[in-house]
Length: 283
Image 1 (tube, helix red, strand yellow):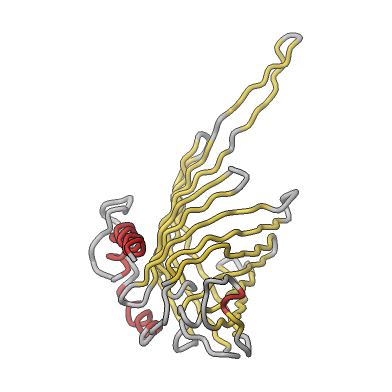
Image 2 (spheres, rainbow, N blue to C red; image 1 turned 135 degrees about the vertical axis):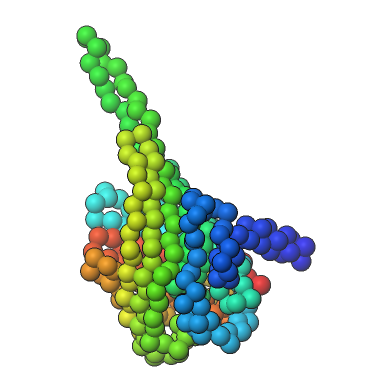
């Protein structure tokens, strides 16, 4: 019990500032890169978000998980594996805060992030920092000898995403029913700041997503995903299209006892990802 309380207190400290934005107050969070910039979900979305999570009373809470993502990209010679650990805290308003630490097994990249989602399906606000290692070694001729020349280079990425628009055909995305078909659309501001030896700059992207989803007609046992999960799960498949008309398909399991989605796969034109959950802590 003491260990659980310690984890929750640690999470509260980690999420504290983020939750100011999550609560949709007018305060400006301390991590904003520009002291005059607001990193908030617009006030006109409050009612839509409240309606989606209203009345949710999950029997259990997801505290953390560790996952392995297997990525099969057409341009890679072999599959790539990514390890990620995330901690969660459900707020009184029904939204879910998350903090994550992600590492590519190849050592080429790693990232940390924190954010807020609606039942694990819809991103509301998110901030992350990532670094990629682009170091290389070349061989230079020196008379009759060839000497190695190492060039150490890395690129830092700072990402911030903020939801600006949301609509859904479902009364609640956070409570799908067996056999239900539903759709949702959202727009978000995505700011990417890049810093490196050969590249730097800031880019603002207006993200758009349109998803059409179908819930399975029968329940699956939640412990199929991980033995620590209780209750029933619903398989949900979504077909999505972004602002560039790029199509993808996402596969989720909705955990009924937790009122939360877990992604288990994603496919687009270039790559296929399969996600497995090696460790899960619940309350």
